[in-house]
Image (cartoon, rainbow, N blue to C red):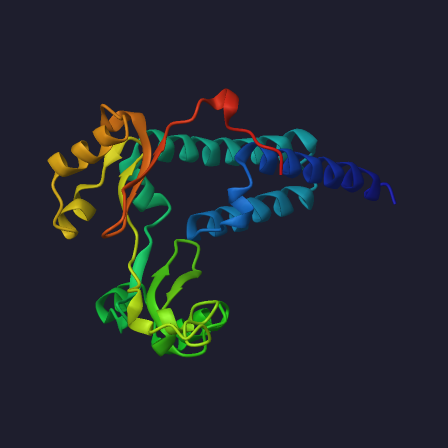
Length: 237
């Protein structure tokens, strides 16, 4: 019976320590679980579990394990924010698996994704046929984002008696992220840096560093979001 009381205190401490750790690391550790986050969660759970049932381990040892691993995770987050080149290595990068209604087999093979798995992911988005999909992107957390073809969008073009070809579906492309130009995307769309800077000037942006995010859709005005002052980026929901 004397062994249960220390286990009680250690379990309670572990619970609240992990709760505080998740608050520090942020909601994305839960809502957007990447492969790295999944491995981290498994290891953290294993470390805490072993510490709880180790007779020689007490609250100081559990605290050390939790905050050491939490510190490593927090440091990893800081590195991925400060050095943008590390994001794809740590978090992975989204991959286009369906483009203009066609399966990109090389991308699927690279991501170890077969047709049956893809169809299963599409069904979670209420898509029961690949023929309905114009573009599909495999996200870093293993989910799929889908842009349907015009006739299958809600509300349906056929229900509104509008020709499906009356409005082409076009995929948005990121051109600026965190104040840096994404040159690969710029080149893919046959656009130049001079053109991009001119578009920014038309919207009163003198430098790329002033732009947090810019998105391009053909035949539409460049969508630009500036950096927001941290004192004004909180909103009530």
